[in-house]
Length: 82
Image (cartoon, rainbow, N blue to C red):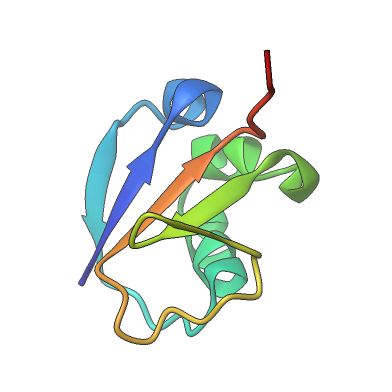
C-alpha cells in the first residue's frame, strides 16, 4: 500500500487530494500507467507526462524512479520560479 498525493490541477482533475493505492508498480511511470487505467479522470490528469512532476517520499524524482520501499508518491505540475 502506498500513499498517493495530488497537487494543483492534478488534484482538480482527479478530484482527490490523496488516496492509498494497492500497486504492483515498480517505478513511478508504472504507477502512472496503473492509475491512468483506472478511470477517465486519471487518464486525463496523466495524459501529458511532460507536464507531471513526481516526488517519492518528498524527494523529487524522474518518472523512471523505483518505488521499492516508498511510502508516498506525490504528483504535481512543474514548479515555476518567481
